[in-house]
Image (cartoon, rainbow, N blue to C red; front, side, top):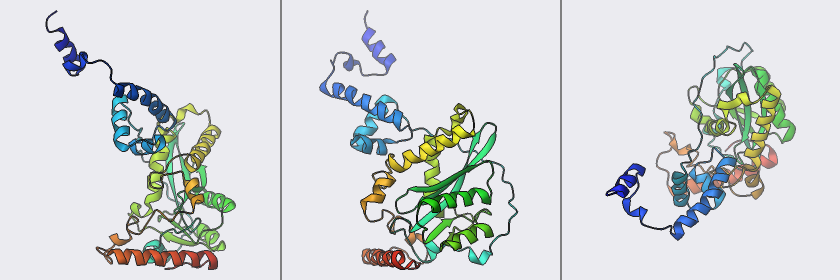
Length: 315
């Protein structure tokens, strides 16, 4: 039939000449690579092309090309907001709520130097549940967590106690100014362990960006849209524990280029250098010179050793 191949190619949206070309070596290699790509995507559904490339030891170009060929798209979760319920507990004074990391221009220089705590919400069986986590800013390891049907001081205190029960106390714990973290009870527990509290400014969630980034991928990987697959809260709790273990021990962190636990044991210098941590984004320091950045980093190294030995905090 005249024009059949032209119409057929147009229907499939491919080049007409490709109908006459037999499979090439590249096609064969792509077919072999696709099986590995699909397997890696099944195990790590939230991985984008960068992490999949690291996982498979491929270039970014190869990974993105094959992902497009296989029509693989990293999973995402649409955010929902729960109803906020006021928490009635004695609060620490506003004057005590300062951002120590910004004031002292600190970055995490070693394991258990600086932690950050926050909580997020997930919808399960017709109601909101809250997951509080504490992350070590040097290694990105989740050092403690808790699950509750209420976002109150009990939730964040439980996460803090979980972390302190498994790790040495940090010099600083950083969080936002939520009423849970500003409670006197939380403050007393932290100070009893020699821990200073640092707070993001109100309306500045990016000042606790490590946790914000973590929750984004946490919800994707735990399939937060399909939690009805769990029969009860016990199964949900178990799934969260397994997900956090996967994150700590197996999942490749895009900044660290390895899992948080592997980075923790590597002895490598911190990845959150001053320029990436946006220390120089403040008005006080603009357009830093390379010598200034190097000097500040070396000061941080000395400060980190001092803090670790004498349990002091400050730049």
